[in-house]
Structures are given as structure tokens and as C-alpha cells.
Image (cartoon, rainbow, N blue to C red):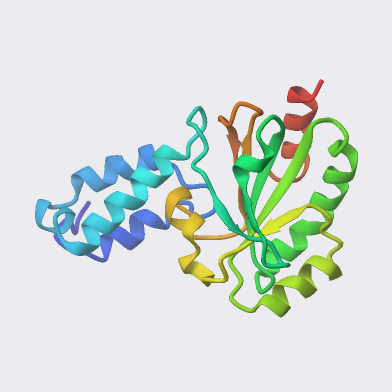
Length: 194
């Protein structure tokens, strides 16, 4: 607020909570930034990021994702329509993601026969590292990637700037939760998968 003409302020706003971003809060601060910053290239990119977060927020239709599985076959989020799907954004090189994986495996094993699926979307760029992490961590659900690292196509449409993050999509394709982990995810699944 004290530096409304400094373009670096956009990075400060973005870092309010990189793992669970609140587009409404960020939009409030963005509106207080000087018009010259909002209209700059960085400002336009930041505005697009906020729109992506809004368009992938709870209550919205989940944006489509179509990428390749580890065998090189095309696979889509839409292929899982009719199930509850946790879209899990992660990468083999991300320590917090790898720490989260054992909890996800346990949750998946408890709910996979109750109309629940996980779709792992990897931000890897090395296919061998990606495949090895899937095998090492025993991640038996569907996985896709475009091997574009942070430029992954899903990152743009879901507003992902830090991982791990996830969205829970209902059988109709509507996002019902965002960034639930561990016990919070388990409670939500118990609630919706009665």
C-alpha cells in the first residue's frame, strides 16, 4: 500500500499464501496498485493469474486438462467424469509433494472403491524421474504431464504457482474443494462419499 507504483508489489501480493491462494484477497490489493502497474505487462499477467484462480475456485466447472500419461497415451480429466476426482498437482523434485504422497496413498486405498479417483498432474520435465517417483512412492492412480515444468498447461488454467496443490472435482465436473490435505481431505471425502 505504501508502494503502489512499484511493480514488485505484484510479487508481494502473490506471496500472501502461495499454497492456498485467495483470489478475492489478492484482487483487493491489486485494485489498490497504481494503474500504470496494473496496465503493465506484469500487471496483465498477474490479472490473468487472478482470473485463472477465480475460474478454478470452489463452485466453478473444473477446467479441462488433457496431457500424456507415462506411457505416452493421451488422457484427460474428462475421462474420469462421473467420479469424485482429486486433481493433484505435484512433481518428483518437490520435497513437500513427496512427503504428502504416503498420506495420499492411504486415502486412495480407503476410498478408491467408493467412486473416487486421483489424477496426478506432474510439473516434471524429466520423464524418467517422474516415472521413478510414481513407482517409488507407489502411486497407483492415473498420472499425466506435458513435461513442461512450471510451464505445464494446467498451471496456467488452475493458477498454480506453488506445489503441492489440489482440487476436488465432483462427478458433474464442479470443483467442491481446493487444497485439502491429510485429515482435512479425508473428512471431506467421508462427507461426500457417504
